[in-house]
Length: 268
Ligand SMILES: [Zn+2]
Image (tube, rainbow, N blue to C red; front, side, top):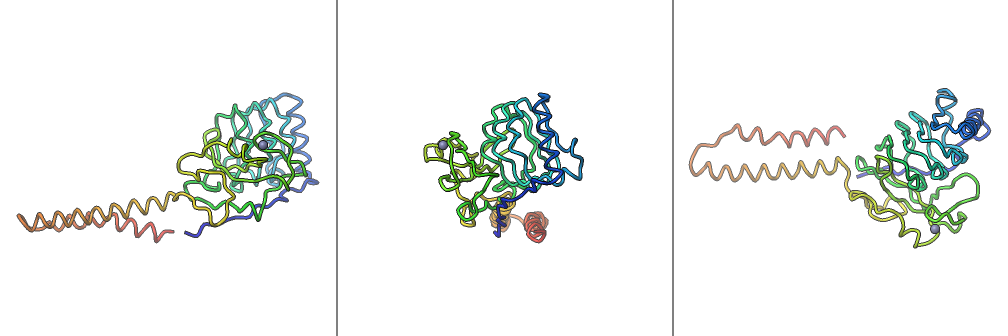
C-alpha cells in the first residue's frame, strides 16, 4: 500500500493580517464577556475566516467557553493552549480537511464530551491509515520559543523535548495527538490507544506499521469468503457426484463475491 505521508508545515499563519488581528480581538471580547461560545466565522465572515490557519495562543483565556465552532475552516493546526480551556464541552471543527492532528493538551480538557471531527483527514485513522509525518526529521514547532511538557507542564526547549504521536479518544472521536515529553515517566503516563491503533507512542514515518485500514480488511474478508465458497462448492460437488446431478445455478451465486472484489479493486 502506498500511504501518502504529508509534511508538517510550521509557518502557517500571517500574523500581520487583518483576519488574524480581528480574531485576536474577538478572543479578548469573548474572554471579557464570559460568553460560553467561540465561533469565529460568525464574527470574521467567510472571507477572513478562510485566512485563519491556526488559532491564537490567547484561546487559553477562554475559561468559560463550552462550545468551539470551527466548521468548514482552513485550519492546519490548533495550539496547545486549547488545553487551558477548562470549560470546553463541545469541539466542532467538522469539514476542516487540513486538520490532520491535534496537540495532546486537548486531552486535558476534562469536560470535553462531544466532538465533530472529519476523521478521514486524520493521521492513522482506521478508514485509510494516513501516514504520520516523521518527527525526527520534521519536528512540530509551535509559535515562539516557549514549550512545555504536554503531560507535566515542565518548561522545555525544542532541543530538550521528545516529540511523539499518540492516538486516543477525546469527546466522541479517536484522534492523533502530538505530545511534547520531558521524560520517559511522562511518556508512560500517556493514554493507551484504542485497540485498532498503533499501541505505543511513536515517531511516525514511512516505516511505521499501522493496523490494516478498512479497505484492506474488506479485501481480506472477501478473499476469505471466496475461499470458503470454493471449498463449499467442492464439497457439494463431491456429494452431488455421489447421489444427484449437479445444480449449475449454485455456481453463479457463488461467483458474486469474486465479482464484487474485482469491482472494488477496479474502483481504487
Ligand atoms: Zn513531563
